[in-house]
Image (tube, rainbow, N blue to C red; front, side, top):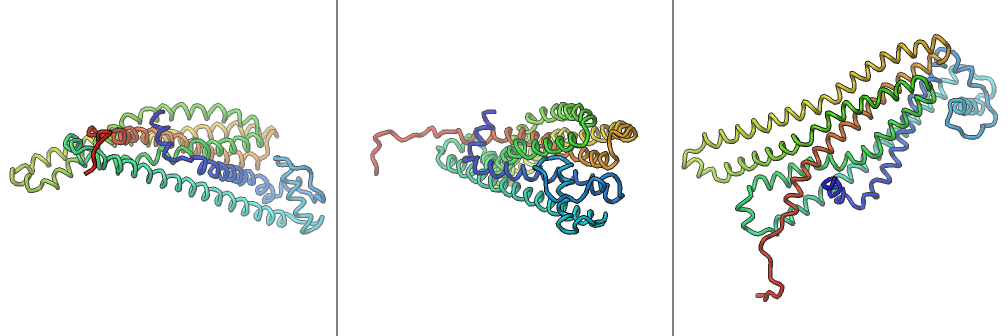
Length: 366
């Protein structure tokens, strides 16, 4: 946690990025959820079933409510302003198509602005970290470079800093975007069917626990992977810088063997991390399909009993199929944050190094 907070310190003032990102994420979550809820009136109007009967001409809008009844009243008011009291199912479809087009535009615009805000935060933060690292390295005593491998220092300033970016950028995603999307989808699902939503409430924590267990084991291999990368860069630097010496002493095979050994070690660590990280998405998708199969059975019973409309059931399945995406993204972001923290430890080990040679207080200038 200490490393994580220190990394976020380079993003100060973080509210400069967090506040607009939060606002854009709210708009994205609201209108993205609304796009799926729109399936209900569209399917109803398309097949001329119960939804069309609910859309009647409305002269005066009632007080604003976040319910389907208010939405039907709003559509009825728009139709009344355009066609009066005489309109067809085609007229309803046209109005619904315009509404969903506007909603999709606002949703995607908000998503773009949120991503752009996060990118600005990422670039500025990495710039500050690199500057701080380079300034500190330039101030270290000469003896430090005799004890430390130059390749490892280069790896920390370049490779490790690039990994750190995931820790920084995914912070906003974990804190705002994914939770807001999950909340928006849950509200939409509750509006359609409380019974089916109880089923989802049981399913989501199970997914979180399973994937969270996988993510928890990623941090240690991530640090070992960064250390192996530093060793590999050091060997490359030693080989290229001292190529004449290597050839003079006929040490080419030795350097090849040394590089191949480190490269093999790095590859094994990378594969181990990839196996665990890539397991999260297929696992959550499989659990989602299993849950959807259960929903089909239970939802079908509700439709047959008249407790849920066919259009509502289709909309519910559409929203439920999407809710696994932010849940999966949320878990992937946590995995990346853990890798970023591991790289951050190496970055701060260099940044916290102080020069052992200091000037006396009353030094005489020459």
